[in-house]
Image 1 (cartoon, rainbow, N blue to C red):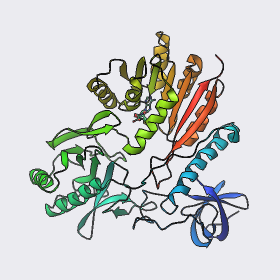
Image 2: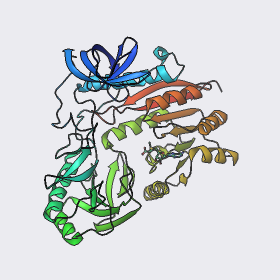
Image 3: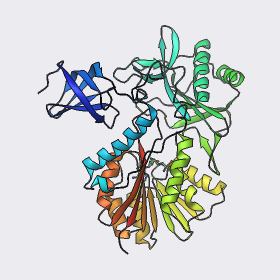
Image 4: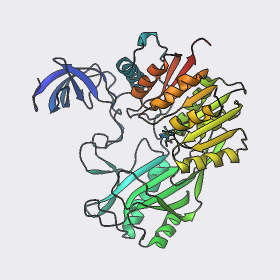
Length: 454
Ligand SMILES: C[S@@+](CC[C@H](N)C(=O)[O-])C[C@H]1O[C@@H](n2cnc3c(N)ncnc32)[C@H](O)[C@@H]1O
């Protein structure tokens, strides 16, 4: 058994689900952030648990040929990315491997018999995120904004984040200086004093318009008019300035109340031939370039012929349903967040779709209700949160037996578990991994399932 603080040699076998290197020391699994598959490293045990251990890398004895110098100067301290030290093609392979590992661990499939395709990556895997949410703080009298360090509560000041679109970097940096000049108080988490908590900047990739949301702990924002005037003067690309109030002690960024301070309540974004109006709190996919590829894959997998009734389960603001609507007879979507459904309805209306309806509620409650009312889908698309689909939904799917299920997943473990349940009546035609978040350990997948027999 390993002891805390013990140093030992380790060969890294693979990347774990959080991007850390995984090796075995006398059959005990050890997770080592920063270590890469194929490397031989010396590790110091930092945490030893009954079934696994965590360690930090002390020295690399044999380097991976895929190890590269991270682009970001704060990569080692910031918790945002996990894979910048691995070359991009190797990242794509590692992500496919993460999907394979999840299937081996959480399903009964013979993985070698499944068609798991190479990960679809980006031509340029930098500056792909359309939204930044940087916490604010004060360091040596200077206003800073960024992300919290991985292992401590230190706020890392980030001037240029290499995975953010540069418009969001620029807006955040300038807003920091405006807050500094106007001496607008920054919120202090421990003392619970001050005002500004978070700077949220979102850009429409297609339009170049930027939305700025200042999240404050109090309703009062000192020197608000001056702040707005300075933002307008120095950042003409900002088309919407809003204040969101969040006085709660919570890990959620936004509170319930949003006040538009200047400009439009929305910015515009375009995906394929659909346009969207994004309000301050509206959810929208973070990587628009890859989202288009992902949705096109969903469309291909759904293989619609204008005769199908389609469910867009966990629909968010309805984007997948709208992507499919022209090729479907009818689309019904549902989500638990009322604002998302309001947006989905408006999006459908603006595009003139008459065959799409959206409802607020749980997928596992609404689908059985629709079926009971006599409405049976031919194709079901699910895009659940990390926890995967509720059992009641899977059960209804097995009862209703749509000819095709398209499963969009942001968590390979819950994907593996859920498609294992569906395998009673469905064949997995293929699984297509996507890289929506280069340089992080996230992997998104589209699985196409077709009903066995009739
Ligand atoms: C991964 S997002 C899907 C977003 C959307 N399909 C898109 O492409 O933008 C998951 C969504 O599931 C919703 N959700 C969570 N639990 C749910 C449930 N039990 N039933 C329906 N929707 C749920 C969340 O509000 C969230 O919008």
